Length: 279
Image 1 (spheres, one colour):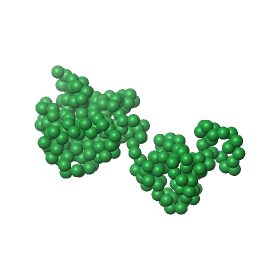
Image 2 (cartoon, helix red, strand yellow):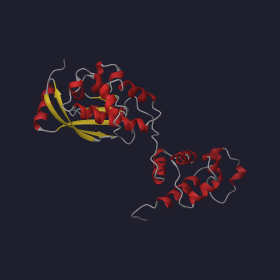
Image 3 (cartoon, one colour):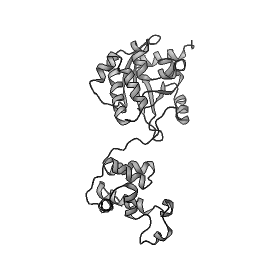
Image 4 (cartoon, helix red, strand yellow):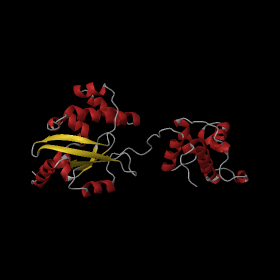
C-alpha cells in the first residue's frame, strides 16, 4: 500500500491500537482470569489507567475523532504503551508535538564517535554536546585551536574559550558574529533542556561577561548546522574555514564539528601548520 500523504489522525488511531494490542497483560501483573477477552493485548480502560486519562479519551483517540493530545498526554501514552525510543518519537510526530529529549545528556564521548574523530584526520574535528563541552578532538583540531588536553575539564568548552581564553578571544576575525551565533545556540539548548542544571549554571557564569550579557539579552535563537569562520592563527596566519555539524542518530546529544579549508591558500596554510613539530 502506498500513500502520498499521511492522515495523522487516522495513523495515530491505528498506531495506538496496534501498540496496545501487542502488550502482554501478564507483564503488567494482571490476573489470568482477565485474559479472557475478545482482542489481544491490554484493554482500553487499562491503558487509560496507566496513562492517567479517561477511557473515553482513549476511545476517541483510537476512533480518530479529531483529538490532538498535549505533549504531556503523549508522554504518558508512550510510557503506558512501553514504546521504544523510535516509536515514542513517531507518536510525538503524529500528535504534532515536538518530543522532549529522552536521551541521557552526554558528558563523555561515545567510544565509536571518539574513534571517528581520530579517523577523520587530517580534517580538524571535535565532538561536543549541547552545552558546547568538548568531549573529544583530534590532533589537527588541537593544533588549530588549543591543546585541550592541557586545560582543566571545566574550560574545555567552546563558548568558555571564546569568551575567556586570552588567545582564543582574539582568534576570530568576526568575533561578535561568532559569539552571537554561539549564544543563539545556547539559548535554544537552554529551552530544549530546561532541567539541565549544569547548563543553567554555565549560562549564569557567562552572564558576568559584559559581551555575553548584552548579546544574551537579544534573545536570538538559532542552531547552525554549517557555516564559515575566518581565523587569525598565530602560526598559520589568516585561515578561512567551512564547518559542518553532524548529529549521530545513536547519540543525539553529541555533535561532530568538522572544519575544512574554504580556499587553496587556507588549505596550504593548514598543511604547513599540521606539518610543524609539536611544541
